[in-house]
Length: 95
Image (cartoon, rainbow, N blue to C red; front, side, top):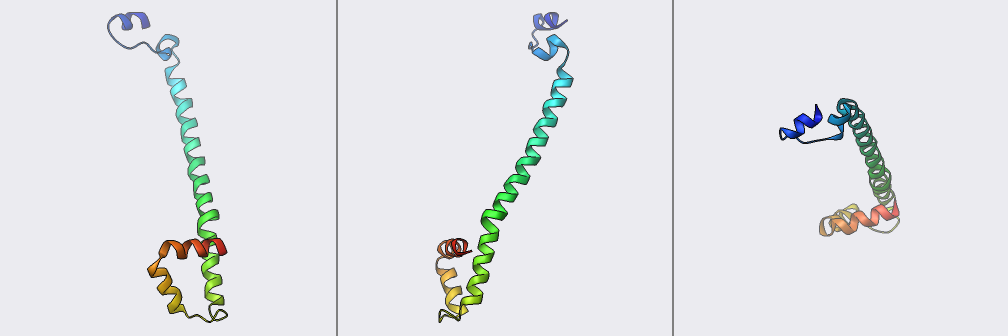
């Protein structure tokens, strides 16, 4: 039957030759969805652990130690508004 369809112009695939296309497609789809779920969970974990958590800890340490260094919160906000990337990098490294 696969060869007759091929002769009529349809593409010839392994699934049609062996008759296992629905099984293979189902298994591959399940594996793909499982990998995507794992990838989404993993990327979320990496972003939180390596990005958000150190940044929040650095900001918290800055708020708690601002008087110890003789500065005010207005100086910190000014530094954040002038250079947000440098401010975030400093807080992330300290955190």
